[in-house]
Image 1 (spheres, rainbow, N blue to C red):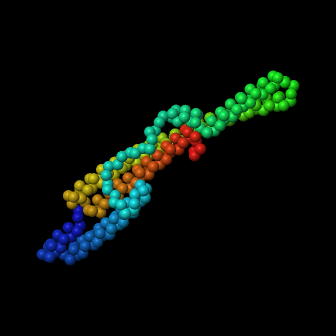
Image 2: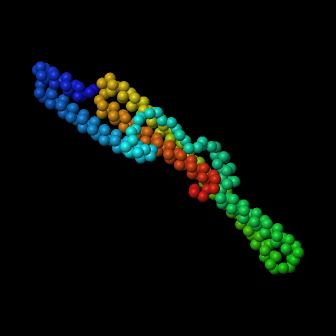
Image 3: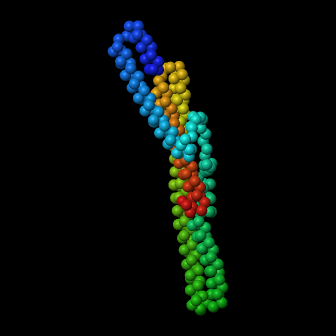
Length: 236
């Protein structure tokens, strides 16, 4: 109910003797309380809009217009095997281990030829032994690297999956809050609720919108980490 309009009607009734001074004073206090609540609501709304602008990178003095939102994902969330297969081919530690392996194989081929020509030479025996050792180390390094990559991809993939679910939950919250705000707006137009109540619903909507924006950013960041983990992996 609109207290200001009601209070005006009560004053008219008081002026013709239908109501007492006590009744008018009570209603006046209700009006003042309503004004204080509305002022507090507007302050909360201003603070929330500033927070939302900071999150979205909008200028502080810009005006926010409530409108339908859209899910702007950075990239498509691919199946697990897509990221793992890419990582096993592209990850820096695996690539380096493969290079070391083929360098060792080349060194061993050279050492084998030298050893065949002079099997009694100490240097040829040592070079062959060093090449074989280099190959074994490279094989072990590849095995350790694959195990590490598998763990990295699994952890990153699970993290993205969880962030995506949280984002969808946040989206549902925005839908609900938007619906409640639209209902409150219609009720206010029909003088069924106070302006303070309507603005409270607006604050609730903006709050869920801000949370959704954060959830999308968090999802995109987690997805970027997964993509990085499936590529060179340097920044992971």
